[in-house]
Image: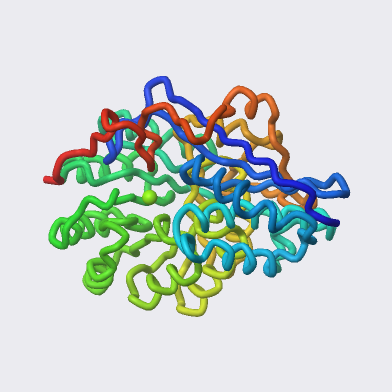
Length: 391
Ligand SMILES: [Mg+2]
């Protein structure tokens, strides 16, 4: 089998109302799909979450000519090749994300060629993966409680909420969600990078009282010293990694003893290959791993193939904000029951793309996005409205 060509598909979804978070009001979401076409007719699929124009540039204008004619099942060798080709401007950020999208598609092809699901090729024995509902953005507290209860009714056993709005709100929101989901389900909180050393300790005390499962990104990702210091003082597990790339980046988190739980994302940090390496490095350091996902269903599935069988794998993130790129992108919808995401026994990633959803959300020009707040990226100064200081 040889690689024939790459196809890139950029998708965009605009919310009717959007959601409120630390970055302002999110109006739209984007993701990039990569299809690796081969001379046998087999097609591997992967996805990456970054600036669509940068993805197009790296994938089609840089990497594609180097992949043509290569054996797609030589995944690790191709990963190294792509990494070296992009090293000068890559290593972290969009180039690593592009490599990862391709890497995931190569794993899909490797699985198809072997007639085995990727999770089994990674050494696994079980086709399910614990998953959590990720939503509960800044809202009024009663609505938050009702929403949390709904996620539990829908089969989740873990929910993640966003804090960092104000001290008063945070305390009320945590109490309300804990009450809504009861003591037997897990409450995860994302600090939205909004705390300082003192407010993080105050919040951690609240989270310990309400038995939070983890405290994610209380600080900006560059501030590793603050993570390390906080971790020595509190008992709630700290989590971070959605802003980190590559094994080298995660080694820095691990070396600094900054977190209890690392959060790589195959659709951001370097694909299935690199997410597995990060999970292994965390395991060697006695840490747990729980993947981030905030883009599309294919990314969630790719992450779940790694987490389902990692000895230190805890859970995968499933966006529950009403995003069709998550809920409808695949012909095989994500099914959660009793907190577990089901993975297919079919070869490769075991999923296929819903063409109708692709056509209705296809971005015509990845270099020319409409102004808006795309959750993690902002286009147009009118949409740059981060929340005021945390009080
Ligand atoms: Mg987060």
